[in-house]
Image (cartoon, rainbow, N blue to C red):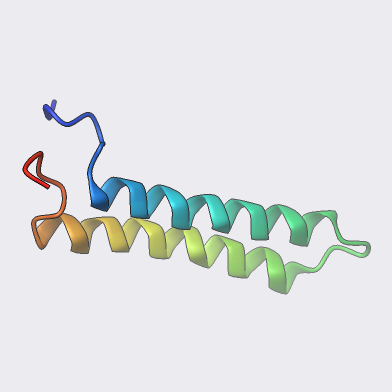
Length: 66
């Protein structure tokens, strides 16, 4: 386990983007009738959050020195 416990720019950025994705996806499901396009945009944002984390971690933003 890492010493930083996720308190890094890479982790925070990924969490914020994923949170926005969940909010967008949830809003798409609450619309009447359900708007699947908005839902899938939210799902896409969650995938982007994962990719963004991996890229930022490889760039060194997931180290405790930042």
